[in-house]
Each structure stands twice: as structure tokens, then as C-alpha cells.
Amino acid sequence: MTNQEIKERAKAKITEYLSLKGINYKNNFTCLNPLHEDKHPSMSYDSKRQKVHCFACGADYDIFDLVSLDTGLTGADLFNHVYRMYNLEKDIFYVGKDNEEKIEDLTSFFAECHKNISLTDYWQKRGLSKKTIDKYNIGYWKEKDRLVIPTGKNSYNARAISCTDKKQRYLKPKGQYSLFNLEIIGKEKEPVFIVEGEFDALSIIECGDCAVALGSSGSRKLIDYLKQNKPLFPLIISLDNDKAGEEGSKKLLKELEEEKIDCICQSLSVPYKDANEALVNNRAELEKAIEDAKKKALCSKTDEYLKKSAAYGLETFIEDIK
Image (cartoon, rainbow, N blue to C red; front, top):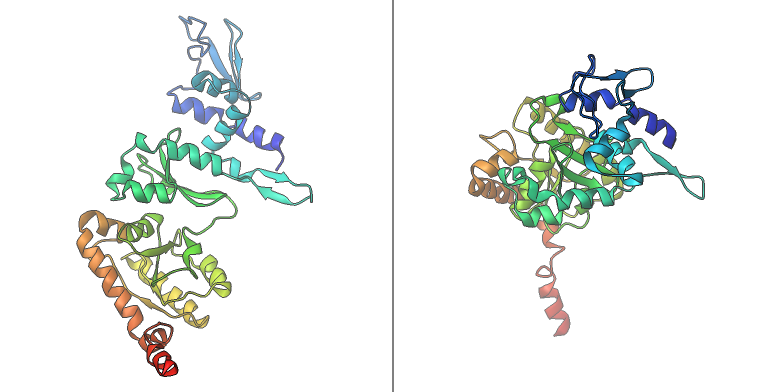
């Protein structure tokens, strides 16, 4: 998709933008030109040009003009801001010197959101500490009222704070999506928990342990990663405490066993729906469930993992010294 194509797609969002401002664009409305004291509604929406036009003062605005009036942004900052508002930047590709397509790096976007984290207390209500927020660069996207959880340089999950529509609650980039904290596997110092949502993974991390979020009950990306990165300890599958989670756990367990990956299924959230709900309602109980699950995961592998420990070879080492 070219820059011009993405620009045209952004322009098509003008009706959505007007609606968010409380404007009924199907009828004439008060002119949006701040220098025009419009006593009679004289501005209307032109669907063919995807612009608004005032028949009194002549003001003629597309979505970039309107956002600039509202935010004061100009130039590249304005365009990037509008693209982010409508999640369009995920579709932008830049062609490099070697003619390879590269997805936009969202590092600056994540940094901007992280600076705004104090503007919401939603993360505190979900039981997360500032230490965890800072470590995983979690931020607040104030224009969309969403908590942004980075899952990679080009990937994130943005949770709407005030949205009541479940289908619109989470916003993920189109195209490639990375699993949250996946890179911990192969570097872990204890068993890693595999959970559904990022908040569930963060809840386990908040308790001092390791977790990876699937982003859903799907598992393909995890399996592909494990083919090249074997875990050092058995994985603990702990999806949501509901029918979908139960079925997802069984499916994932079978897939991991086929790949000869040591793992167990162990719920952490009973009687709650998931790990985050358990954290918010009874942190001590969640911490105990985590410890019990880790012991269970290691129980059947005691001999194998003891052989990797320094203590296992100590007796032989002493004999060699003698």
C-alpha cells in the first residue's frame, strides 16, 4: 500500500471523526472554522470530496485539517497522528534499498503512549504495578482511550478502557502480530505459563513469575516458535477458566506433545475466569496456585532436571578432586 493510498483511506474516516465530535454530518452543522462565528448552521459534508465545506466563510476541510484544528499538529506529526488514530499505520510499508518491504517501527508511538500512562488508572485497577508497567513499556493511547501493550516493535494489543462493545474492546494491528513475551522461552529460569490474554500474563509476571500470552486461544505462532526455541523447563498451559479455555488447553496440550515439548495443564484462576481476575480478587491465592503449578510441572521431571543442576554433579566433582 502506497503512502497516497493510506492517505486516502484516512480521509474516508472523516464521517467517523465528525460523529465522535457529536456532529450529525447528514445535516448542516455549525462551521468548524474557529474564526467564523456561525449563527446559522452553514457547513455540510461533501461525500464526493470527503470534505466539509462552509457556504458562508468558504472554509474547506478534510480530516487532516480538522485534526490539525483540534490538536495544533502539523506536517508529519499530524499525518502520523491521524494514521494512529485509525490503526492505519499497520498497513504502511516502506521499501528499503534492497527492495525489501519493511513494516513501520512503532517504537516512538509506544514511547509517546508510555509518557501518558499517568493519565489513566486503568492499569492499577487491573492489579498492575508501575514497575511492571515500566518494564513492559505499557502506555495510554489517549486519543482512542486505550491501554497499549506492546508485543513487538511493530505489534501491540490496545485495550479500550470505556468501550462496552466486546467486539471492539481489543485493537490489534492488521497483518503480522507477535505474541506477548514469547522471547522469554529458552531464557527462562523456571517453568513458563502459557495464558490467553496479555493481562493474564502480566498478572503472573506481577507475582514474580514467567508467562507468555497467546492473544487468544490460538497456538500456531507458539508452536512455530518452539520448533526453533526449546523451553528449558516444562510449559504450564493455563488458559481461561471457561469452556473455550478448556477446549483450547486440550488442543494445545496435544500439539505440544506432538512436538515433544514437556508441558502440563493447570488452572490458576478457579473460581475466577482468568489469572487477572484472580490477581485483582485474591493475589495470595493466585501466588499459591502459581507455586503449586510449578511444583507439579517439575515433579515428573525431577531426575532429568536434577541432572542439570550443580548439586547433582557435586559428589562426582569431589571424588575427582580426591
